[in-house]
Length: 53
Image (cartoon, rainbow, N blue to C red; front, side, top):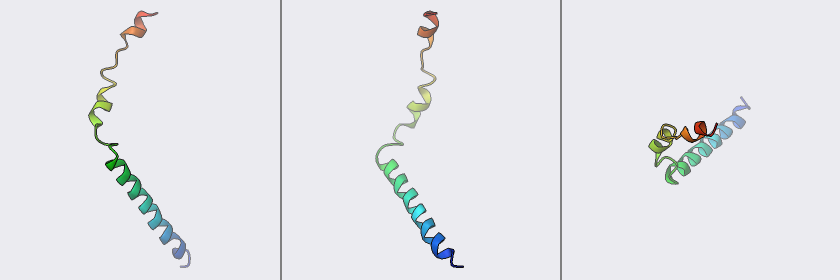
């Protein structure tokens, strides 16, 4: 029972840290442009590396 006095505040602190870091990521533009990151690999031009061989 006494372990709950340690684990409960630690878990609440952990949830608070996760919430603050998510809030920071959302409001600092980390999720603004998610489409270009996924499409960049499809637009990658590898023809220059093959022609140098």
